[in-house]
Image (cartoon, rainbow, N blue to C red):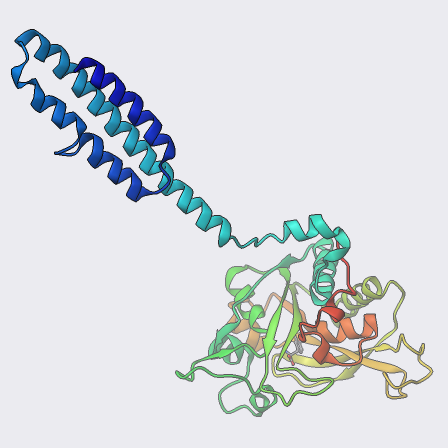
Length: 347
Ligand code: DAH
């Protein structure tokens, strides 16, 4: 019987090497250590053996049983792990795109031109001491309109028709000016920050209008801030972006959250001011609405208007991208057309 146990151990070792599925593991278990399995048969056959023999055979049979149990449990776990790994491998999603960059070289990838310009402008402003703030795309009436001096019945709301939620209290923000309100909530004057991001309007889409576009808001609040400060920062910004000195002019413009409000134009960089289709022969391109922050806006933001004042601006990033790269249709920007985006490299 002792020899029989030895040969069972060897037999089991061979059989285990062949096993591929969990069903086969269970069969093996039944065959060797099940109620009617090989080891049980041996133990039954011990009835006629002497006490001495029984002890030795019993101990050996038990240790074989334990070894088999352990080996089968390990095997089962190994098979399950293999199955999980195979599933993970077949359903793998590479979010990093690392492999495609490795395979095709750095030229295969790039950043979207709006992201490029946004990052560049963020760098320019951080170098001048501005913080960068973010705000939610889903805004409430208060942050998008009310606190910006645009009450419920104000006609300026018609210029910014957007997508409202059913509660008629939340909306997709129409401009990044809502970041001004959020910025004042978390900052004590004096402060200066910019806030870039997507904005939404219920627009009829054409070559120069999109329902989703990008702005970069800016706000500077301190003591004795003047229009001269505003012009200085805007000129610095635009000269850095266009890598040349730009001339600017201010025209009056109406926005409820600034007083006075301006439209800032730059001399047309396409024709040098001589007149072309981009500047509609005027020599000037409208680029940047801005102004001195309205005291009502500062008060709503908890700023002491006896002591502080400031300027704000809202830069349209898509327009800037179009000017810089000579893009004639805003719809390219969100087209997702690879032929368009692949032209911009950014590593
Ligand atoms: N929020 C305005 C718009 O989207 C743009 C704007 C105008 C922003 C004047 C400003 C500003 O900060 O001072 O039409």
